[in-house]
Amino acid sequence: MAALVSKIEVHCPECGHAQMESENFLSTVCRSCSFYFKSSLASGGAKKRAKRATIQKRELTCADCGAVQMVAEEAQSSSCIECGRHLELGHREIAGEHLGNLSLEGELLIGPKGNFGGAKGRAARIVLQGRASGFLEGAEWLRVEGQSKMRAGARGGQLVIQEGASLEAGDLLQFDSGEVLGELRCGTARFAGALRVGPKGKIVAEKIFFGDLTVERGGRVACLGEAHPRMSERESEASRSEGETGIGATTD
Image (cartoon, rainbow, N blue to C red; front, top):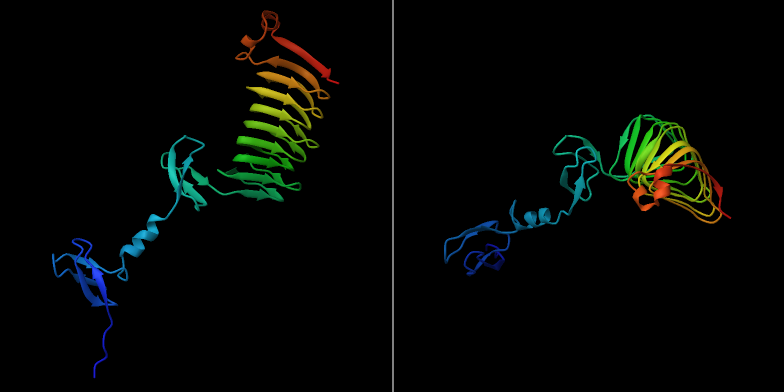
């Protein structure tokens, strides 16, 4: 005697007609409207399509050409659709010596014993605890957390030197803004906007340019300072005509 085949009720996705089919059926034809349809067990069926639809994406802007594209959230690398630049999307930590160039859309950590020795290192955010022989660019910010040295210069959004930390730079620093809570020693530094020196902050430099300078009580600045031309209209007529000002002060 032949074994009975278990059946299930299925509904036509076109007209809704209900009919009985084998529980393992892969495809069938509606007995009401003749519409051909597949079961979820068939390759390429609804189950597979639903899996593709759940992929989450995020917006990515190329640091070189500014082109915007969508990439999967879990992606670790991509290529710019406009200029072809390789985009490394994750985070990176340098614990020892690193000699190659780097370009990250995530965060770069240069540890206490780390040294970035490439020509240029770029990341959205940079935490510097060690040294950098090459040029650094922190698109959003560069934060100094150790007793750090830079042989080349740096640029980016905001420069932050944490309390207890120090930065000695051998070349030009260019940032949108700055917050010095520790110690900064450099030749020339340019801040397009505000520069704040905290109560334990100290700047020793040949020259600094700034939009607005705030030195909190206890902070120390020893350098030649010049207000940024774009910001000088906020100053008095005397300050504008004077232009360049020598700074060598301690606020108690």
